[in-house]
Structure formats: C-alpha cells, structure tokens
Image (cartoon, rainbow, N blue to C red; front, top):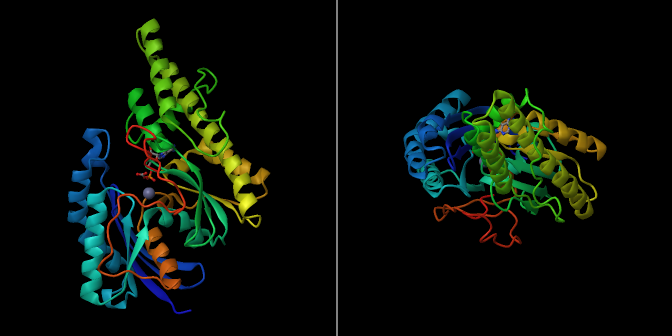
Length: 364
Ligand code: KG4
Ligand code: ZN
C-alpha cells in the first residue's frame, strides 16, 4: 500500500480548518499539521452562526489556513497526493468556499480532488485516533448533529436514529441563554451544574416512551423555560442555587436520554453486526463529563471498548476530512471539477428525508 500524504479542508460551519495527514497504510496516520480558525467572536453578538458572515470569514481564512498547514507540516503542495475537502452537509456558503478553494488547488497542482461528507469525517475519526476496526457504533453529538451510526466500512453507514429537532449542543446553548449564562452553553451549564442537585426539578425525558433510537431536545428546552418562568413568578427571580439546580437537572435529562437511546442503539447495532468492535463518540457535547461517564459505564456493561477521541479531533477539524479522504482514495474513488457543494447529504442513502420534523427541519 503506497504512503499517502493528503491535504484536508473543512469550512462547513464556523471553523476554517486545514490539515496534512500522512498514512503509510492501514489505520496508521501521522498528523503532520492541523490548523483551525474558529469564528466564535464573529457570531457572538447574534446568538448563533450567521451563514453570510461565516462564508465571508471562510473566504478570508481558507488560503491562510492552507498555507499554515503546509508550512507546519513542512510539505510542499507538489508533495501532496490528493486534496480532500468537505463537500457537505453544512452551510452552503462555507461549503462552496472550501470546494472552490480545493478545486483551485487541485487544478493548479494537477493533484486528485476528493469530496468528503463532513459526517463521515466525524464517523471515521476513531479509525485514525484509536485504530478502531469496523464495524462500530458511533454517537455523533455536537451543536449541529445528533445521530447514531453503525459504521460498517468507510462507505457503508447505517443510521439507527437521530434527533427529530434540535441537536444536544444547540439545546445546551439555548439552555445557557435562558439562564443568563455565557456561550458556548455546554461548558457553562456543566460548570454551573457542579453546585446543583439534578433531582430538584423534574424535567422530561423526551421520546423515552417511544421505541427506537430517535431523540428530541426542543421540548426539554421549553420545559426548562417554563420552570424558570414559574420560579421567577413566585420568587421574583432566580437564586444562584436555583440556577445551579436547573443546570444540573437539565444536564441530567440530556445525559439520561442519550444514555438510554445509546443502550438501544447498541442492541440494534449488535443485531445487525454481531462482531461490533466498539462504541465511539464524537462532537463537542462528547466533552460533557456526566454524559461521558454514563456512556463509559454503558460500554463497560456491554463489554465493548469506549472510544472518545481527543477533543480537538471530536470537534470540527480538517484532520478528520483528510483521513476520510484517505479512506475514500484507498477505495479507488476520486472526484473531478464537477464536484458540487451539498447543503444536505445523508450518510445513509436508504434514510428517508426527515421533512417537517422540527421548526427548521432536523439538522442532523
Ligand atoms: O462539535 P462542535 O465543536 O461544533 C459544532 O457542532 O458546531 O460542538 C459545539 C457544541 C456547542 O453547542 C457546545 O455548547 C457543546 O458542543 N459543548 C458541550 C460541552 N462542551 C461543548 N455541551 C455539553 N457539555 C460540554 N462540556
Ligand atoms: Zn461537525
């Protein structure tokens, strides 16, 4: 198997990233560089990612990120074997910026172009970080995604369930906003919850009464808002202890739901693939210590290794895109100048479209 050196680009949401990976074969990979320019400050005033601002920032930062990634890797463009780029799903302006940049680099250097599904980047991360063999179960939990994927090989994914409305990170961010805590909400809620009691307020566990692995988080956020409002009505405001108890109760509800649904997803995955090798997580919410502990216990009970890659490869980055590019290239697939940017691109081709589920439709 020839050694491959791949440049990866990522710009599908609010991180502009470029990375260089070198793999001699198998799941061995050396991360020669991984550069990420976040945009948190640019969007902070708006309470969410503004697509047009994101796209402009990507255009400004993409060439700088590529130059730095090549520099830090000490590799010239001529020494790169292919250029991998996120071609969807994501905010279309950002995805387009990355795809155009990658096409320019491929055309200029004469190197092959490989379009990568952003979700496959997340899903294949435990391969290069932990050398995890197929098939495994992946729980992807971030600000924009929430789904259970049985990863059978680099091309075959079975989506066992996912959110029908908000992603859990989005729910944490909205919860923080409701409670007057800073963004990003996940770490803020987690820190505040340390002083709280998770049993003080009874928040719902959405969709647990229904079979299957689908999840819902928007009702939980509404329940939190109602509890906050009734406290404010009766007491004239929230005490610090109320806030901590609300955070702890909210965090416990999210963790409970994700853990119970993970249990079901593991059973479903084992039915399809009895030789399941592990249970992996990715996405920013995987940083949550309560959730992580619950999932670790669950994996141990199921006698499976629990794989949580280092956080810098769990959140959006370009190393995962370069790796997914390597796996795609090794399966003999490349793209050409007709590669298009796709706002929606389900990994599981058999998956029916989730239209009408949630205000803006299921994002994950
Ligand atoms: O994967 P990620 O960096 O990117 C996007 O999805 O854009 O995930 C970011 C999300 C945010 O919503 C953030 O609040 C959440 O991950 N997050 C957490 C924690 N750390 C980050 N949620 C819960 N607990 C945490 N410790
Ligand atoms: Zn992502």
